[in-house]
Length: 173
Image 1 (cartoon, rainbow, N blue to C red):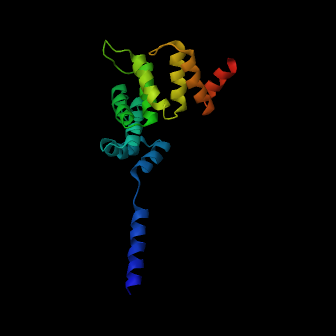
Image 2 (cartoon, rainbow, N blue to C red):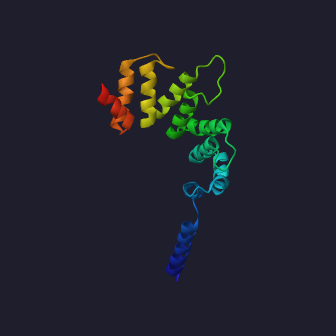
Image 3 (cartoon, rainbow, N blue to C red):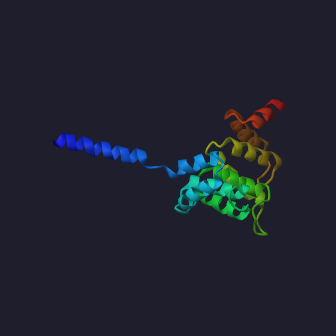
């Protein structure tokens, strides 16, 4: 009898686990359906609780104005929260906001230097877009000391990861 009770209890536990929804996955599905209101409802509590993927996705909703009023300020805040937790995609997007003048900086700060710092964080984790972007900054000396060697290193890494522009750059050398 004990064995039967254990089996029933195990089966019920498994059913509860299977029935339990994954809010982040549900939010991702809502985003794919372009149901931004549902995605927002699911993402906000996760992001506030510190979930970096939710913070990234919420930042992107604000960046593009999907389901919310477009706000670079809120996008920047959510991207930075996720980036500080080590999420490479958020680090790259944060770098882009600095590189393209979409993030406010103090008068004594160089936005391309901030972009380079965030690109470096993402590039060091193997993020091909960040590797290419960092390589271009080294090539032009924007935010970093100009270095053809460093530029080649990062662009070659991006190309090895399959980045199309990096491959074209290599072919043109």
